Length: 438
Image (tube, rainbow, N blue to C red; front, side, top):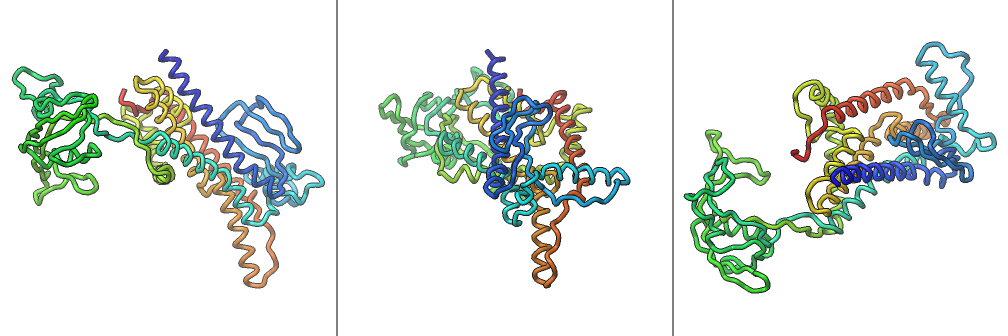
């Protein structure tokens, strides 16, 4: 059964990845067709063709390696001019790119080419793919946060400590001489629902904790709901030393650099977690937070990849916040699906993984380098700036920007991406990331 659940998690993520890639390409396809560009192919995956069917002028299909996708638009760049035989490797690459681009311009459809679109339309076409991933991530996060809810401590008691264990003790079970914990001594039972404490109604576990911590050694009148009946208890929190923290959760230090401590009340009550539905805008906020984290990861990508390489060949553990390959994401999805946890909890984690994957696709594709979508956007913006400057200075309209000249740089970027993918793939196979603590 565990193996089936593991495989189910992988299948869930593979299907989610396929849908994410497919919608990314739809984000390019729809505006391109709306703007009249001839689209020859819409493909999910790379490598050998598994299935395809032509509808109208566009061939739709699936290829063997589900590691991406593409649409083939007519005339991504201006047609080349005969410049004679190419000399040198880079010149050959440029000429090959121009020849391939020329082949996409069908006879009789010379006006239905991408490079002839106004700049704003080209930007919309290239933004469509990444924005589709962003929208999908926001939808998933919204379903998680506002449809299912976010786990928060409730006023229902899940468990109580039977005794007071010494601070820093390694023992897990109570001894005969260990004093009873305040909650156990007061008569709390798992399943009790906190109603009021010290004469004040409590709506959240945080409110109850605040009262307990502020009342070390002071008897508190507590009312709980136990199987539909109101039961009165008397709780006397035990004084305990705790380190002070600031508003950011960082330890507060004194003038000598030592941690500042203060006395708080301790009861030994553990809250039951429950899903609490959040406002509808929470999903968007979660997506933006994730986008910021992925952006930071990409900025530090060289260092992160170096750390991955070091961990691959040494005993150093993988950074749990580091990059992953598709294999790594699939492995984590399988482990999550096979864990001994409520089905809803596992589903939420899998949905979070899929949403995070779409945010990664959004942010990564916005990197301003060809062949990524961000690179095409930069080319369109540069073309627009040239045209605006010519109009401002009264000069003739310049020729469209010939991005095929950037093919050597594009090849370098592609090689680096392939190298990064290979490194992460090897690391995820031979030195998998451990985020579940198993």
